[in-house]
Length: 194
Image (spheres, rainbow, N blue to C red):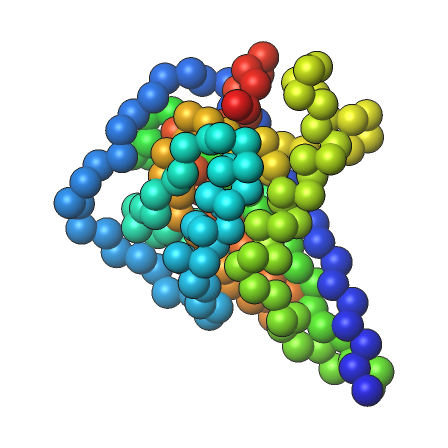
């Protein structure tokens, strides 16, 4: 009998720049392969469902951001030792203002005999993990509750973000790293998300 233990570790970028650059169109993009595939339409729809509840404009999918997410997911599951963390997005080449980024680590499914497998988690669940941080966000004060994290939520609902792209990869221990990038980025100090 399997005992499912799913632990979630999330992090989101905090940006300080306030310039905007439009998403280039019709630019060929090489998307690095990852060892997990995700349904881009599903994760996009999940984001837009959360955003629509607040009257925030919908996001569009970006192959360019999907490629950046895949690069980072591959790095984190390899050389990055499966630690969920952001990269130095403010100086990321090719992006004038950097990117917003949410990173999710999902622990493997553990079995009584000591085996581990990649946990069965879908795109909706990953967005739900970030969206549920909304209970810890105080809109009036524009802050997370003391001791809580809500930056993943505020990035998901950031009004000025227009495009997104995501990717996922699994680690040698069967944990997973999910990465979503957003442009323009969110979480600017002193600004409310919507």
